[in-house]
Image 1 (cartoon, helix red, strand yellow):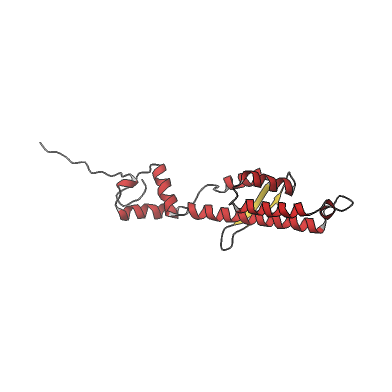
Image 2 (cartoon, rainbow, N blue to C red; image 1 turned 120 degrees about the vertical axis):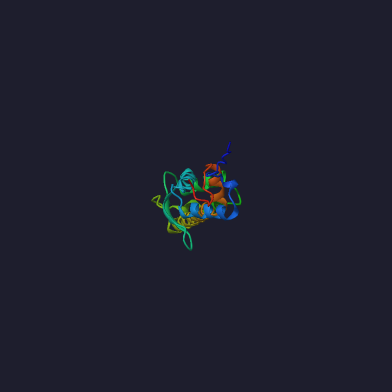
Length: 169
C-alpha cells in the first residue's frame, strides 16, 4: 500500500514565505486602484456645500470646485459643526467666519445687495483654503491606498488564494 502525499497548491497570504508575501503585495500594488476611491471625500465635501469638480494629487495637490446650494457662511458653519477642530477644513472655516464677524453689513454688500469686492475676495480665499484642504485629504487617501499596509489589509480582507510564489490564483 502506497500513501500518496498531496502537495498543497493554494495558500492564504499568511501561509506564504516572506519573499512570496512581498511579491503578492507588489502585484496588488501594480494592479492599481480600480474604483472611484475619491467618492467618499466628494460626498463629505457635498455635505458642506462644496462641489469638487476636479483634483490632482501629484506634486502640490490641488482641487477645483465651488460652493453650491448655500452661502459661503452656511458652508463654513457646517464645516465648523461637523469637522474636527484639528482638521484643516475647520481651520479654514473658522478663519473665514472670524473675518466675516469683523465686517459690518455694509462691508459685505453694497446698497444694491451685491457683494462688495472685499467680501468676494474673502469668500474666494475661503473657497481656495477649503479646496486646498480637501486636495491634501485626497492626496493622503491615495498615498494610503497605494501603501503596503493597505495592500496587506485588502489581501487579507478579501481572503485571496496564492500559489507558493505569491501569485494570486
